[in-house]
Length: 403
Image 1 (tube, rainbow, N blue to C red):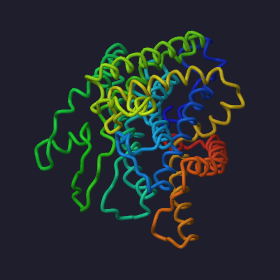
Image 2: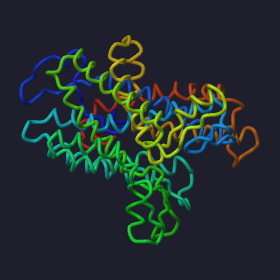
Image 3: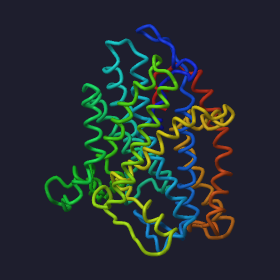
Image 4: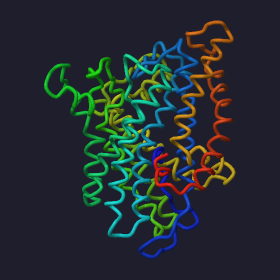
């Protein structure tokens, strides 16, 4: 998925066929939209938690002793969202390029990625931040996943001009090696602090017009992930048999999970937080899966990307009635992302007004209720996404590619 690129893609039934050098207009790949839709629903649950479960905030990584298992695994499930989003962004960029003439593919994709990336960065500063705060002039601006995807797209615009083996090597070095940079710290006011805060060290940036910005999603690891997405693009070419593509995905996903298990067991590299060995079986399992997201550790990315690509292979064999429902969310990702933030925030404000606690976030009593609220929000959002996707298909303006 890219949550952010709505490039046309080949249908599952057509993937095994050969095509002429310049492809005709293609249908979307249902499995990609369905996986994107699945993780977007997990994202909805997590963002509902931010507003409707504020009495029990979670840290990064989580504190095992004070985090109930139900809350721990709810938050852990949401860890799939950003890695899958960014990986599918790179994959969708490759599919976008494949739909162009051979001599125009990289240039066309590069141009689109730069413009789309700049658009997403601007969106994070404005419409997305307002959705979180409902404050037009916040003292603190959070630069989160939309910002990270936007900057990663701009970086990919340059990376994709490298030969594919170099792209793979570059991506793996970043994903697996960036934790070597953890000891590097540049304090505010020191030379290079801004660049380092954007790339790897979560921090606060003073803004020239007043206030501050927090780089919640340091972007360097995500550049590696988006490059991996571009690198697996040829697996989705029309000339690749579906069975062979699933085999490659399962091998890649299995390799990532085995690598994660080895690194986490050794516990010497790949995750800044060491495992806890006391507290019983459940606590031990939770500790094994308790990983750092900001920035995402090598272990975090191996686990989530491994699960993600295995899910992508599995979804291709799911019943059509399931994938079709999920794909509705995945076919209008940016629309859904913005819509659900405003709906969740407005619904919480409305609940506060009804209960007479205006100005304070309303919390539900337990995690089951949290999932129920998210499920209720998902239903109208599904119909809205379906309507928006149908409307967008009727539009011919170039700007619709960016929504």
